[in-house]
Length: 349
Image (cartoon, rainbow, N blue to C red):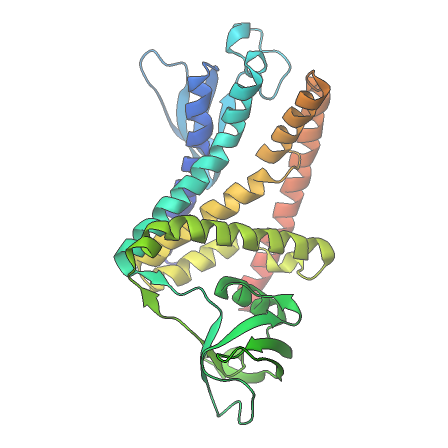
């Protein structure tokens, strides 16, 4: 293992997790909820400290793959040693809602800040699915013209280059049918067949088209790029989840810590800016996943709060905690499966 990659890996995960937990922590403190511990990492503590006149233990744990903010009343029905007015359940619905959703909001805000900063440094990459070139070596006869806009791939509508690349990854190695809009407004459909090539011992598939990779220095585009890019990535996450549900994507396409480590290594080769971009990308992923209305996620807790709002009274705390515990167990099993798939891919590669 490369020591630089390991350090980057720890840095990327730590920043992504820290900003999420910081959101929970700040709003918990603002609501005067008793916070037992603010931990970065999981597993045994390797370092801890306390601040003067602050009940919270701040700690760093051995494995840099997570973190948590432990609040009174969050996991158990009652914390007898903590005053009732400092427990999570005693706070108003809005205070509890903001404390739970703050982690996601902080993730999204950091992503927006990162993407906007990179835009002002490097410019805004064109995200329109426009073809700027065709390799005649692979496509001797084709209806594709320069400046064609891709409207769909295999009947899946395409709005951005990001969406095209997502669909492209799904169909990579298979025939793809493109619906194209020419510059004169006419629309045509063409099917491209992949050509297999081996580059540096790795099999790859070539379709013979090149998308527009131009960069804009327009001030307004740079100013709004962070928000636009964040919403584009959130849209992609919706598609990824729906594709997992309908079977268009398999669990093998997901990555755990080992997969992220490999991505960090590849990003590091391209420069530190790519590492920073990766933090923004992971922030979107972490924020989106935590919004899913599933047990053990922030979204699951928000779902119970919505049910509480509709019913006019809280859901039984014991029942809610049991559901979250079962959800956490299933999540751990899923992570083990994804990690195993990462190990298999790592060995095969």
